[in-house]
Image (cartoon, rainbow, N blue to C red; front, side, top):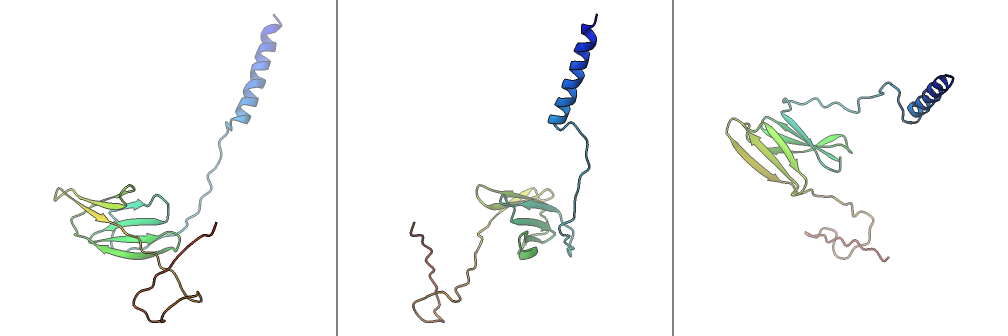
Length: 140
């Protein structure tokens, strides 16, 4: 008869240890607003790049390309006002626009242009040459 209370006690000790180790507890969530964009037009759809650096915001008549790292809108792509849905394809780096009312799709190819400052770096040729070729190399 004394074995049942002992087994029950061991069970409750095991349950307490298990709930402590697995994080069986309720807690609060801490959050802060990083930024808020006030747009001129209502956002219809939003998509994020896979690397988390860009937001593509579809508004009536244009796509806003927002840089998360720089916290500003970097570019605007004009589109027809009929498009109301936006999907970012990671494989082909395209934006797929959909229009429910027109029953159509438009695919926009993205090519990100990177700007490099050549100030203070060694160069050959004139300062005002129409073309600059930059060579990046690693000797390892």
